[in-house]
Length: 182
Length: 365
Image 1 (cartoon, rainbow over the protein chains, first blue to last red):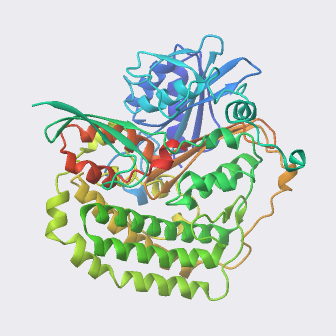
Image 2 (image 1 turned 45 degrees about the horizontal axis):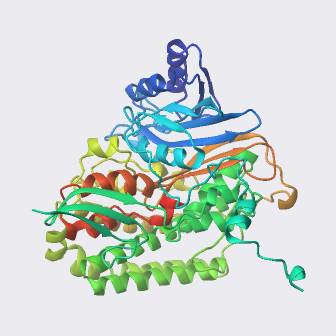
Image 3 (image 1 turned 180 degrees about the vertical axis):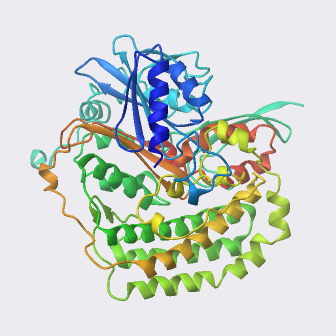
């Protein structure tokens, strides 16, 4: 798509955030691996450059490395008057079809992070969900109350060390196999 | 006046789906609204980590029962991207046609919900009947009415049966023939105008700030459609337009839905005309021994309610390491709904919620 613009953005990012690893994986994906202190700054920087749509905040539990990985996926709404037919030819400063995957790692022992609500308002339910399912505490978040779950869990249920089957057997009793019944 | 707390849903006549809203009201005016999802939380994303790539299909389509095809599509696309599978040209066209049929069916379902809520029972019954005609098509094509498991990594499960093209055309013609009736009874009806105009109004700036997608954004004049922004399947091969409105209220959202249905039907005709012959399926490896290389991806499609994304991580095994759906109802139902309900009246809660097209199972997953 807008390969030139991507290269330009990559250059800009590399200049501004020297500690972060930046690469373009495919033609429309930029993957940024950032230090956790830099995340909010990078989000602000991207928003200022026209990447104003926070699509998703996700989390992955890398239990072997003893780390959580927070993933922010950012894209652009583009210009409301974009002429879609000429998008490839136009010299827009932003690539509309670009997805930026911003990743950062935090320690599993002390899962603390800062909220992204000041930059993107719709981060609120995503962070609330991650707090509930992974047990990560977001500093500055106005309401980290339970979102989906009804019960209290010792280990937040989406962590890799949460054994779904064991939990079900403990709480709801084991359903015996047919052979065992006889 | 006394301030009261009112529980709206999860079962309420004025709304569809299992989402509960706690309202703080003073008289008829809502001071504060809190959305409480979770009634349909089945932990699908965790369940998917324990099943192989192909075993996940029956789970994926159940994330959203109104339009399961876009769910299958986004999952199939993510698997294809991670495993580097090519899709034959004909399969791209079939996928687009199935997705557009699903979009029409889903919009008719949404129209049913909205018309029912407003008391337009006749229109609601028509919409449900016409949706059923499309489900009949799906039944013939895939064997299932609601859950199809038809879009598959590497293409689609099987080709169109004999004479199926004509059946699609006939069905769409018989639905399209009723558009004047819909217009006369519903869309151009004064009652609908009075009831929906200015309700749940959101500006373009605010919609962007709150992460709106789909009709909610397009009703504010923004031409944001993933089918144009990041074309997938065969959407790039035909000529079509993104319908928009300027006002940003419930009235314009419903008009966008109507225009989109008509645009989709036209698009299906164009796709059927252009559809090439050939294979519809590239074989995937044995599903029981299928290890997908290490990697991660984010793919997105335009579902009937807006941007539907999937973030998927593979650690080189036979099961996904992490799956996370970005569903359009999530921001609409949790962020925008709470914002729009402030200062609205109690009678408009269902109106605002259904016009935002919130589908509860999509939020909870």
